[in-house]
Image (cartoon, rainbow, N blue to C red; front, side, top):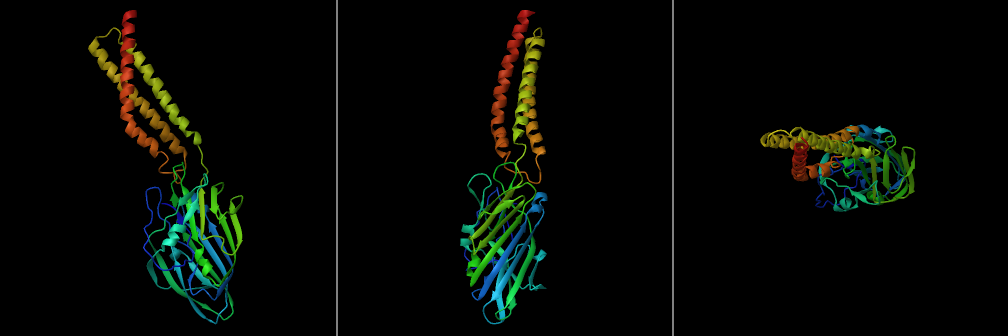
Length: 353
């Protein structure tokens, strides 16, 4: 699974063909954002977005809450709005505390400009991570009954399934994306407050930059601060020294192979050439197997120390591929070296006998 977005209200502009950038390291997120529709006579006095990322630690769905204070500058009536709604069937929409019934759901293509704006910050360095929307999304169209020159409170609450991006370090990076650009279509936009709750001790980065206090990110902005809100969160990288287990396994395997070769070489000093050759080949093969078993065993032990629910699928990929491609060559060279060593030790043992 990859990059996730938080739902919210989304502006669906003119639909256009979109080709999502999909590949193995990530899975498409769901687009999320602000209301779209009849907005020009609506004023947002304030908006508060609260994202609870704490369930990411157990790979569970994340609660999302959005609250608007909206003033209708026009006459009384209804306003037709559009939402993109990943998982909204598990949530609710309320106007002035009253639950709104859902309207018809359909599929719509995502505008290309949203795809191009979507990025989340990398935790390591100054780079950004691609945030790929699916080509289509579920859309709910419904109407808001608003009073003349009246102020209303609109609330959205739902759960969002977690998603991630694999950057090739031990743990995956979870992405949250929220499209803010459609909010510019309101007649006026006041203040935006953002609050993000992180799992204990997790690393995080955000654009626009949010202030961190403990395991909480927050920010307050006058107007719309950016076209896209991107948050990346990741479990702290641990057991960076795990490569020592691999090196230790290889060292023990190498030492064990050499010891076995020398021991058998000496023991066959008085044996016939045929039996010596057979034992030499067997000892070389056993030493090669020992080397690889202990090396791979060190890597497996390292992996077992990591949090399996957060572990990257790519982190050990390069090492595994190198082992697969170079292993036979290394085994052949190592085996030949041990075989030569075996007969040199045997020859010396015969001379000393």
